[in-house]
Amino acid sequence: MLVKMFKATVQRVSTSAYKITQNCKSKDSHSVLIMIPHGRRCLSTSSCLYGKILPRKKPRVVHEIAGLEPITYADKMHFVPGLAKPKFPPWERGWKEPNHYQSPKLEDMPLYKDKPCYIFNQRTNVLEGVRQALWLSKSVLIKGLPDQILTLAEDPANQIENQDERVQNAIKNSRLWDTTEHRPPRERFCPLVLNRLLHLCGGLQVTHPELAKRILAEKYSLAATWRRGEDVFQVRGQNGLLLNSMTPLPVVAGQEQIQSTADQALETFYPIVPTIDLQNTHVYQEKNDTGFRKDYPYTHAHTLFLMEMGNTPKLLPEQLRAKMVMFTFGNALARAQALYGKEPSILEKPIVVQSVATNGRLFQFVVFQLNTTDLQSDSGVKNLAWVDEDQPLYEFAKVKPLIKKKVVQVPAGLSGYQPNTFKKFLALYLHGAV
Image (cartoon, rainbow, N blue to C red; front, side, top):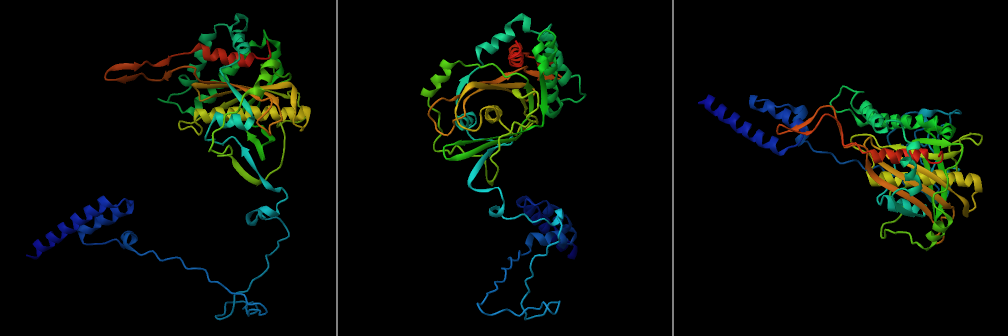
């Protein structure tokens, strides 16, 4: 009789434990209830499910009475009940201790300013994408690349020998021949694809001597400051691989097209504020710096190369294009202020900077022409930005074929190669050297 009652009790406990584990999402609860059918209870884990959480104690408020000095236990050198806790002045070590450094208040810092500054850096993910970047840089959007740049790659004299075959081999070398993994990570093949394409373009130095007057710079730091309306803006920080040149890029748009921008209105996105998603700080320095010394021989920014690596990209294509527009604008503005000073004006000779961004397969192209540094108002001459978006270099690069229902959907190897994408890449590289 006792055995039957014990079995019935164990069965009831097991049933209730099963119901509890179904309703409870805590991992600890599953391990605690395993021991219940054996007639035991693990208090170290089960008590956390049913224990009461004690409320936080409110800090004791010490009232200060004017004219009365509290009696403390400072002279006793130990705690004495009934006496007040002494307050000692902060101890000055006399040297800088990095482990115990206390930052001063923002208001006490030498670079503190009442008016905030809105900063665009390499991690900024703006909500409105290219539209927001165009408003910040006071620019007008033109879809596609300029015709005078596209015609450069159509000339057989400017093309690489066996161009399509060598480009496909460069892609295969980066995606297929360089790894034994089934699917190589994007952090690995994305920089390889870009570097090998740049290496192919650099081979034209024999027929185009002007290409020898260029150099690639990595991890340079940019700073450009301007005013838009009543706000202060900055583009700053490290931003990719920069191709510098001894000579500036030729002007893309003529004076007639530049003057026609005065009649075009900037696109707004009311009720969203244009400063959304920008870093806001009161401690800043109004600095304009190209990132290179004044005696640096390659003073002109040519093309900025950005890579969006990772299987889960930090920036979507729209936000990546906005980053391209802002950093090409920042490079051009820093160069303009170094040449013509900080006084806002319409530039006698506009400054052109290009940008190429890729994730290893898709390419984004931007050409930016800075026509004016008078950016405070929405009226007057505006800058120009040519944007060519989402150009695939190839469709698939598979180590193994993709088979579904015994049918090969995607064959192994490289498929869907797009030669026009590399022609645009080559045209931007040759711009200014032909």
